[in-house]
View 1: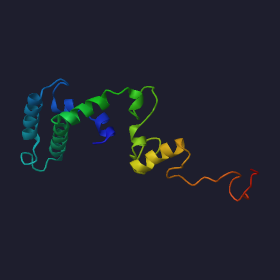
View 2 (view 1 turned 30 degrees about the horizontal axis):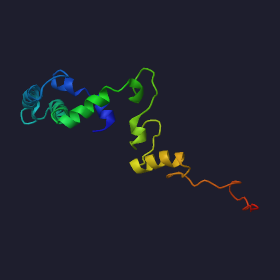
View 3 (view 1 turned 135 degrees about the vertical axis):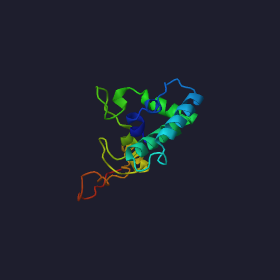
View 4 (view 1 turned 90 degrees about the vertical axis):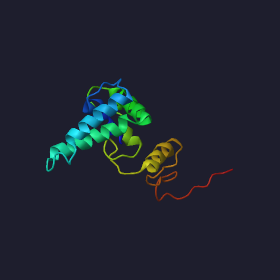
Length: 147
């Protein structure tokens, strides 16, 4: 799951349960909806198939305690850190840092390249960007300094 998926999809709403629902409540709701929208029970109905996939995705996240905590923490972030959300803030998109395409960076570089750019800039070691010229710029003659 990407951060964007977590922000755009309300898995609790998809399953029709509250945010404080127990694992048993989540499982019960999932089973009911999965039976209702299962492709075998709705042959040729692409809407039911899409709904079944959505319900399954929601259950995959909410039934796993670790993934559910991650999902809840991402959704509780202030809107400024959500990237693409309305309402002020910093406009910071986690996808920019972790190499997902889109957002302000728009690049397709992987995590290593993005973090290399970040840390390379901090320590003057261009991490993945074009090489920087030394003193005097490109084509300048080397200078010798008296010692």
